[in-house]
Length: 606
Image (cartoon, rainbow, N blue to C red; front, side, top):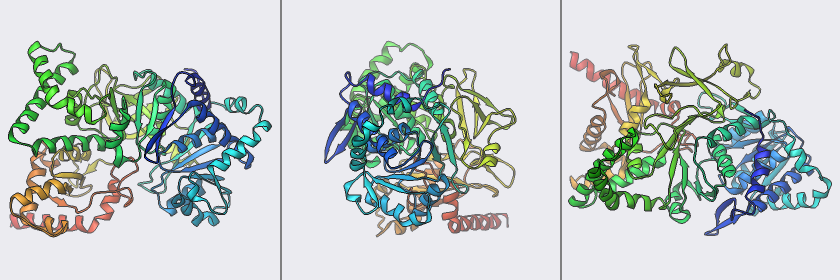
């Protein structure tokens, strides 16, 4: 496969669609959606890039982007790439100390900041960062001494354009093997590591995915995930090249409203979004009249029968097609309307998606295409094809990538998308490649006879009980989260006699149930302290896990008052639970739960 660069992708895309598409991006400003054309995007990124050059930033210098997902992030990214600088994405949810570490480790000479709040974080630590010379702010409200506003940077670039007559040629001449970005991992097991991705690492992955996904000009996507993560960033590059208009959601919390405004044809997200939609649909059905509930569950069963035929490639019998048409009109069409009415497919990544949820969406003609990858793999390794998906798998390898399963079940990968290594960490880099050059993903999985990959769990997340039994926690957690009384769940038990499960209740459902039983409480802690409530939640959780092996079954349900958050350090920016952080945060509660279980077991034995 030939090699390519992201600057090549940028200029070719901006030229190709300048006269055929209404815009490249849309963003909501002042309550209204505003379009950014391909010509405006190219002009602004070019002027920013020249502005960076005028500030003294040289090819190979590192420039950080500390911002929420927004159109300015995308433009600054291309500005860095066109200036041949290496951009360093930083999650805006990180603490000042974490930001300082990344800026220091990367040796960043400049940083784009979105807001006054993000500027303040950098200013607080700037004296400890001798390499950092330049701060650029997206918003005028962030103006302060020593900070260049984005508009001023663009004006500086515009005024200097005549001094860079060969700017585009120089940007396009960058080597495909040149470093494009340093993306720091979440650092759940120590300091974060800077993943070095070249232009071709990412460009080759874009080309591979375009061979799998059916994308057409003038489609619309609603983008909501952090651009600081390679998943959303690579997806945006892919959509841009295919001529898909990217609409940036206001925030994750406003996705439901934005769906009805944008009417997208494609949405890329994480399982948490689909779990929330599914939970809301179930809640609406269960809170309705008896006839409404009966219709919903009849439609759900019919939809599953129809989905089973479709997924197996078996023709739909006329009687089933008739019932499905009725079910669609009564139930599924309403769900499609709530998601904007034009969705062709969703894409899910970053964590496993429940098969039950995937099948429900498929039944509603809202297929969710699940894929798999890591930051170190740019990121996509596998992707389910839209015309022949297998639910419960993450699909076959994308073109150009090789996978194999090691003797211990670990997934190993090779391909043009595999990272160059960890920045300034040769030992850590060496540790993730085997003797034959295969990248060790740290995930456990298996390939079926058709080459579709099924992920079992993270290798480091596998729990090994004191009795030597291995337990994969994610499938257990996903099963429990299907219950309407559960908002979140985490299974723990490494090196313990047995597993336990921490459960965050869905208070909306729990409070409704408590009211029907005449149970009252002034606060959530008081509600969770009620014996009837504890017993109810334990029955609901254990009822979801009837099919587990005895050694997998949690022996204790521990109720947690508050859901896990990014701000508390318990979730990654892509909403994956940091298991070790949760375990450290609730250590006292966990130790008490095991002590109580041991005491109960001793009493029974006695």
